[in-house]
Image (tube, rainbow, N blue to C red; front, side):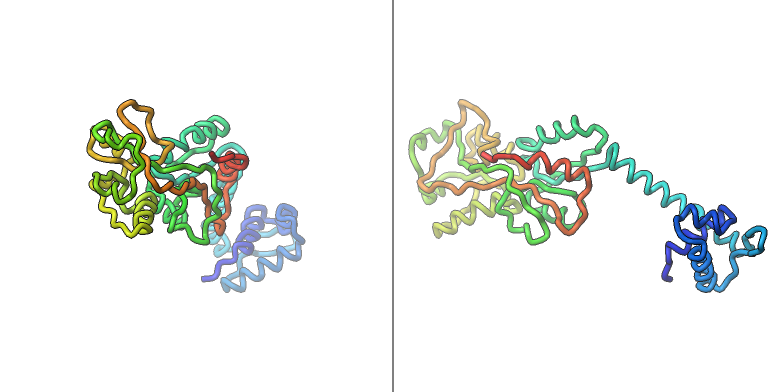
Length: 295
């Protein structure tokens, strides 16, 4: 059934004021437009809704039945409008998707500042890999994502802004001290256990592609979903971990394993769906990156 909201809105105002002229004033339309709308609704429903006389307007029994259904609906709409207007001025919600690593080592200061600037806006953070975050964005489950880039899942739906450059690096503990001061080829690296993120990550895609460019097949010793765990395993000597530079800890027990091939730099990007209306809360958060000079 095709429901014309405007017809029911006019009916509601006439039914609650019992006056065509008063309804026209509250709706800011002409009295003739009110009359035409009521006639159109009566024709649609094939029922007379009002008893009209020169002195007053009354609801018919059918009109009273309709009002019992229309009035709660109108009240719900009014409450919804009021809640939206209130959220725009005093609060609302922002939904952010990012990996655990990006949240922990990059996003937290921004979330802290946003919470201080807009204490009434609810912040919801969903942790997923950078690849999965794109799926969340496309499904409308988050308002924006912060992700590693390049990201093969980022298509034409998203507006992407680069906000930070970073380098990836190999780290190891002193069990591999013979590698200190040397620059290893990728082929030499394969002689040692490599610890890295699992294949459902942009980091795994990135490193595998670098080895493939050298016609080498990378078979990691350990694949995990956490950079922090990779660091812990490197710290106890289980292998050489591949992690972003921004989460490398300052530790006497760990050192950077240099390579002959200079690894390309990657970026962190913030992305939102350009085909979906952007909320005020999201626009305010995006402003934090307007003048960001990534390092």
